[in-house]
Structures are given as structure tokens and as C-alpha cells.
Image (cartoon, rainbow, N blue to C red; front, side, top):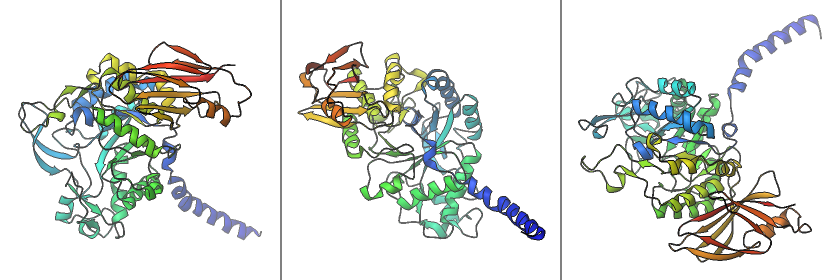
Length: 467
């Protein structure tokens, strides 16, 4: 190569590095952000849509001290942070909505009643505490932005150019959907995610988005192409299409149940969704059984304020202790994200012990969704293999009836014979040692054993084959 050609090549290569490489390196992959099921707290179960700034700081203090050592790192504010409201006197409960808080481009802003100092100081405080910070938003563009026909940031287009006025959430009419075939549509999502990233947001929960695959992809592109590091969670959980799994996997979390609360029906929803979605998990993508309603719930809503539904009034979780064990065992064995919903400021000791049990957390962070290996009447047996150790795993024996049961189960019923075959251990034929996670009981099983299971309860067992 001649000297002048070498100089020309050097100049061109330098320009490529300056122009092309930053754009290449800016692009990220969402799936890299959640190698294991995320752990954290979401404000909805305890504060509904009325979390205030002072409570958020107090909650983060407790979370950093008592839950972060066990891996709970994501502090997420759910709906309501960007809704202007008028409050009932002497309460944080809204009397009247005054519409969505937004800027001149129709992008969300924090509500002055609840967050007068903004969201970024909260995110910065979370980071100082070693936590990560997230917020909720609903898909689409605010109706107010469309009514005012606000400009789409960085483009020559306007809100009415991209809004799909026929696409409206059935339970929240604040937004219109976005027609992703229109010029300026992707730019709106880019601007929204860029704004949240500018507040140092680490987690976004996008609601009413599961039925709309093009908008799922639009948010994913905004995160990835913008070079942002954000967990991306999809909601709601009761409108899924098998053909859309490829779209769902553009996110890190997919709600697979309708809203979960402290009642037996929610436990049954968990079993149904777990079975429906088993085998769909992978590093970076986790089917989500929704929040954990342990402790004090809906703490801001009281009967003294008109029109508060009975199930939304302040209360202690109505789960029995056996139901709580069943509930959290489901989530551990299904490798679901563990997102605490109850009030961290008043969490009772029993709930705290369940949430921070290291054996339960080890099963969850193993990142393998368990499979059903036995079902007879109201007895279910599920098995979660260890992802790296062929000689161990976890078993859940669930009693889905309202009466205590004694049941005789053998190695085949527990999935252990198939387990031996799958790892070519037929020649070994050693007994298995079963260690109860919720008690101190240890069982050695060579053939069969009689298990006593409380009503709506579970035996959660860690197993390994003895040598």
C-alpha cells in the first residue's frame, strides 16, 4: 500500500470509528440484563397508585438494610406517579384526578402532589443505597397530548400523526395506543425511554402492552438502540397468544397471571399459569407470577373514604401461613421473579422469614422452571432440577384441597426414577435424602414414604442422591 493510500485508509478508518462504532457499541441486548429471575419490591399491593415521596425514601431505607443482603435490588413505583390528583383532606388518597402530568412533548412527568422533587432524586438515592430503581407506565401516548396535538420530540410529526384512537385500555383511559406503522411512532417511544434513562431508571414496567406485539418491540428497540441498561417487564397477565412468544421474549419479564391478591383463587391462578408456561423460561426472560401480597396491603385506603372497595381497604394479608408457604414455593420452583408487594415498613416476622429464606432463594435463582411429575386428586408433585448438579434439585408436594392429607408416594411419584434415568444413574440406585425447607425434617427415601401435608399446604423439599 502506497503511503498516500495508507494515510487515506487511516483517515477513513478513524472516521468510521468516530461515526459507526459508537452507534454499534450503544446498542445493547435486553436479555443480558436478567440472567436470573429479578428480585425486588413494587409499590402497588401496599400503596396502590398513591405512593408518596416520603414513603418511597423510607421504604428504600428498609429495603437496603433488610432485603438487599438477600438479593432484592429493584425498587419499583407502580401506577400513579405521573397522575395529577386532588387529595382527600388529611390523607394521601385521591379525591379527583386532574389528568396526566406531562411535558411539552407529551412525555410523562412526576405528579407534584406525590413527588414534588421529581423522580431522579429518588433514583439517585436508590443507587446510593445499592438499590436499582424502576417505574411503571402504560403503553401509548396521553390523550391530553393528542388533544393538544403536541410535537413528537426530535421529529416533524405530532401526536395526532401517531395515535391510534381506536386502541384504548379497558381499565385506564389516560392513553391512546400508538400506530407503529406511522412515521414518528418509534421516535415517541425513543424519547420516552431516553427521558426515563436520564432520570437513571433501571427498570420499566409497561402495562396494557402484552396484547400489542408491535408496541412491545418498540419499547425494546428504544431501550436497546438507546444503549440503556433497563429491565423490561410486560403486563398485564391475562391476555396471551402462543404465537407471540417471540415478541414477549423481547422483554425480561412477562406477567402470566391476572392480578394476584391474598386469596385462594390467586394460588390456583399460579398453578394454572405455571403449567401453561413451563419450559418457556430462559436466561434473560422470566415468566412472572405477579407480586407477593404478604404483610400489610393497601395501607393508604381506609373505609372512612368513600367508594373504597372492600378488597382494596387496608388490611393484613389474608393468607394463612400454609397458604403463604404454598404461594412462595410456587414462585421459587417456577423461577418466577420475586417482587414483594406488601408494605416493607410493617412487614411481619413470619413473612420476612419466608421471603428471605436462603434455600427458597437458591431454588428461585437456580433459574429452572419446575415440571409437574405427579397428579392424583388434589395432590400435585412438581420437580425442579438443579441446572448444574445432576444429583440434586427441589420437589414440591402440594395439597390443593381444603383438608389435610396423608399420602404415600414413591420415588417414581416424586419424579426421582425419571430423574435417575435422565442422568444415566440406573446402576447407582442409591437412596435420596430429602430436606424440608420450611421445617427441620429430613427424610431418606429408598422406595416409598407417607407424607403428611396440611390443607392448602406444601412440603418443599431439597433432594440429593446419597453416595
